Length: 122
Image 1: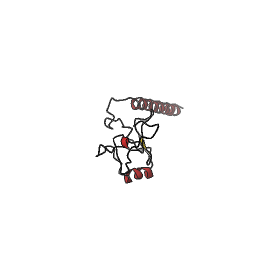
Image 2: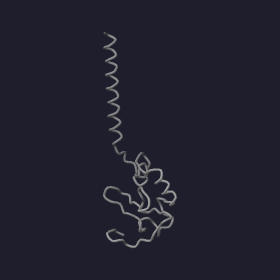
Image 3: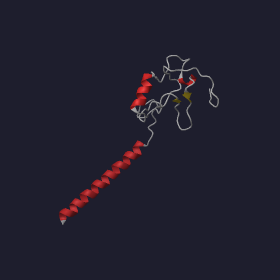
Image 4: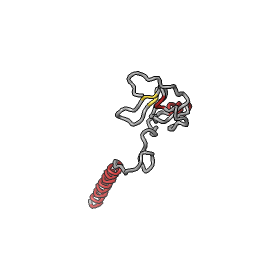
């Protein structure tokens, strides 16, 4: 009987300890450490986060030579006719020809001069 009580105490202690550690992990994981949004100090820049993009879509981005910073400042994503500006839900823009977040100052090999589509800010 004493062995059963000891085992029960041990299991209850383990469950209590695990739940405490889990709660501590959730609390510390939700804290903003005040780091920069450049991917350093544990803060992920949402425009660089490609974790939700499939392998085929990542390959499409690479084939189009997408870069976050354009070498030619006159040919950036924000000046491209295929660029979709960010909305209230995301600080990142998008592109009509590949999936994933797009930097306004980025560029790819398929740049098309902006023609001022109606309903879109230029």
